[in-house]
Length: 118
Image (cartoon, rainbow, N blue to C red; front, top):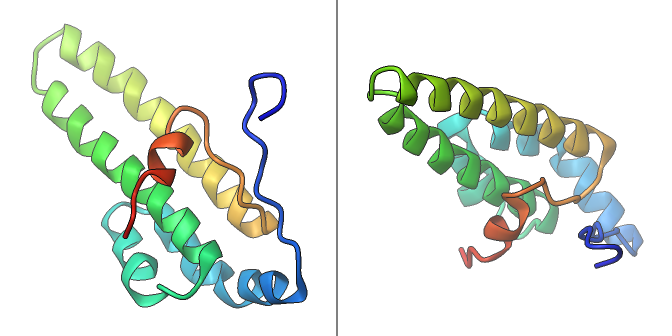
């Protein structure tokens, strides 16, 4: 951790690079709601896929929580709209990280995702 920012986990070996190249497509699914379960369950041996699947799972949980909040008139709608917009931005950031082959934690949720031991 430098300057208060999390340090991205950099791939260090040819094995890591191979893992990234083989699992990019399935890792993209991690950021599309319930589809995060596919890489989470199908690619247990891939650090890259598991990293992104866990972040996708946190996004899914946040999406469900926002859906409950969204039921409340006026204030819930405002919070829900802002929250959905924020989650959409995180989803896009996650997909960009996958395509770039990075394992960079997403803002606010990256730390939560690392706590999952699946």
